[in-house]
Amino acid sequence: MRARLRDERGLTLVELLVGMTLGILVLGAVLTGFERFAGAQQTASEATAAQDTARAQVRATVAELREARVATGQIGPIPAGWTVTRSDLVFATYVPSGATSVPGWVRYCTLTSGATSSLVRASRAGDTWVAPGACAATGGTGGWTHQVVLRDLLQQPGQLFDYASDACVGATCLPAAADVRAVGIRVAVARRVGSTALGTVVRGAVSFRNRPAT
Image (tube, rainbow, N blue to C red):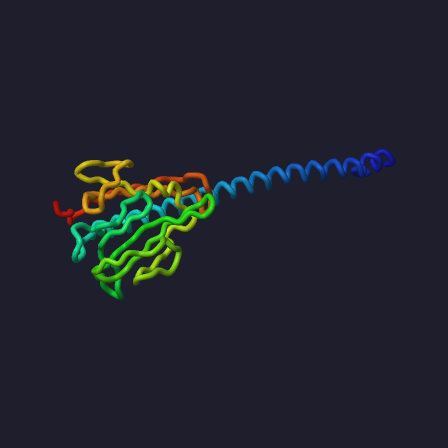
C-alpha cells in the first residue's frame, strides 16, 4: 500500500515547470506558423486586388481612347501644342454627363510622393480646348476636375505611355501631338498599396480611329 502511494504521488514542481515550458514552446511554434500563413494569405489577397484594379483601369483608359475624337479647331485627338510625354496624356473623347456622354477631354497624369506614385484622371466637358493646370489629386482649373484612380499603387510612372507615329514607335518615340497614330498604355502596380515592390504590369494599346490629318 505504501509503495503504491509513492508511485502515485504525481509530478514534482520541476517536472511540472518543464512540461509547461515545453507546452509554451510548442504553442508558440504553432501560433508563429499560423501568423505567417495568415500574413501570406493577406499579401496574396492584396496583390490580387492590385492586379484587378490595374486591369480595370487599363480597360477604362482603352475604352476612352477608342472613343477619341477630333475637337473643333484641332487636327488630331491630342490637342495641338500639347507636349507628348510618357507620364502625361490629354486627348479629346466623350465624358459622362448625367445619364449620357458629351464631347469633352480626358487627361491622365502622375503624382509622386516619396517612394510611391498615384495615377490621376482629369476630365472636362466641352468641345473647346482649355489647357489643364498642374496635375493634382483633387480640384482643377478651367473646368477640369482631377481625381486619383490608382492611389499609392503606381510603379514606374515615367513608362506609363508609349506612342507610335509614321516616323517612330516605342519607348523613345515622342512625336508631335498631331503625328500620334497610336497610344500604348503600361500600368505597373505594386504588390499592395504603399509598397515599393513591383507586383504586375498590365498593358493596352489603341490606334486612333480619327487619325490626324496628313
